[in-house]
Length: 113
Image (tube, rainbow, N blue to C red; front, side, top):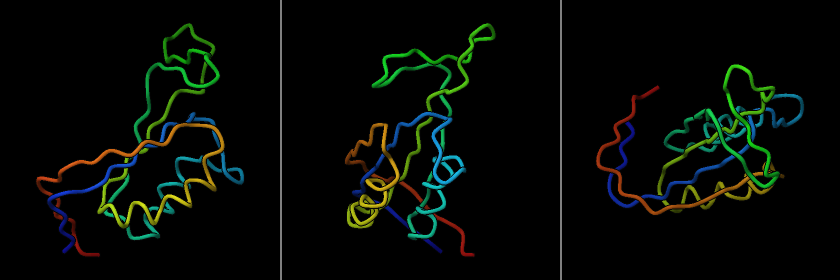
């Protein structure tokens, strides 16, 4: 059983929904690499509206032509494990934003595979 409590590090990656890595969604590649690296978990959140470095506003409103909605991938684990994963993000994220936050995990109990 996987357990994580106490001080941790959260990495949040902001990219576009249409960003790709070798013809597959970039967010999927990041999640699969985080899993392969043994990180505690990763979640992908699709935004309804936002803008980034391009200054173009992307929205999910019905009459909007934009389909490249903002996506956030959130990963939390020990600082050591998250920092060891950062070089992979340097390789993958060409356009986007990667932020680190110190956080405190109150309860995380994962299942055994």
